[in-house]
Amino acid sequence: MEVLAAYSHSAQASDLGLCVQDASAKQRLTRRPVARQEWRLTDRLSEAQILAIVHAYLSGATAAQLAAAYGLSLSSLKRILRSAGATKIRIGS
Image (cartoon, rainbow, N blue to C red; front, side, top):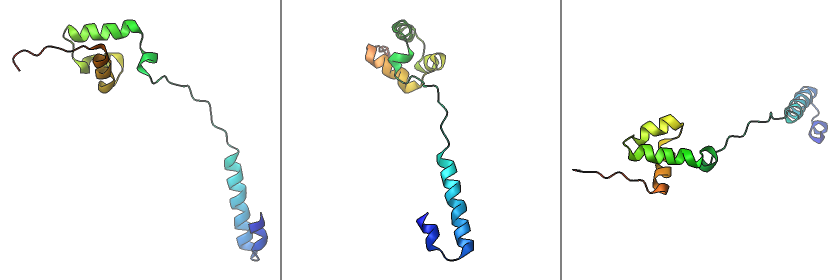
């Protein structure tokens, strides 16, 4: 408000007054609470689901198919498989 007193021109002062009112009104807005989504894989998947993913992968399902089926990114699914030590044996490559 000290800035408003420094201006002698009434048009500038009224413009600044509107800016101050607008800024203070925007600060009063509150955020809505947002539903928190679990991000860690261990929070999103049970141990049984992880075992099912590993078993399906070793039985022949592709990582992309499993990622789509469980709603995971491909990198997250591959991280699960790596941590479980699941690797397919490639013959003839």
